[in-house]
Length: 100
Image 1 (tube, rainbow, N blue to C red):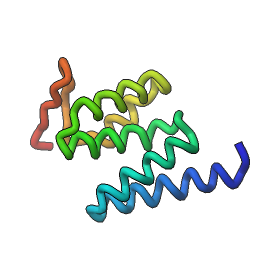
Image 2: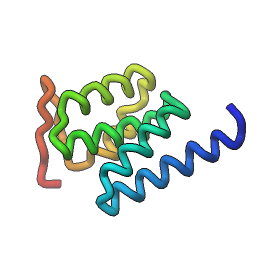
Image 3: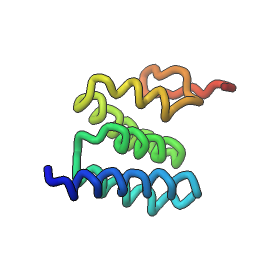
């Protein structure tokens, strides 16, 4: 992968994260998807995208993204824990929120 693409990947991911934090969900989704076009193995982007789908109630799409993340990166559970800090348990496709 060219150096330009690596910088573009990091910049695109950061912009998506910033947009999501500012409530620009649709734009964040577009940029996370762009990040995944550049590198489908970028697990952090895939898991953050899944989290957006979770917040929007798109549980099947969320599950698809999480499954893909775990398939591509067995250490994805570390990013999962970071992104889903308010979720303590996953069982049979149902996420249970905690008071944390």
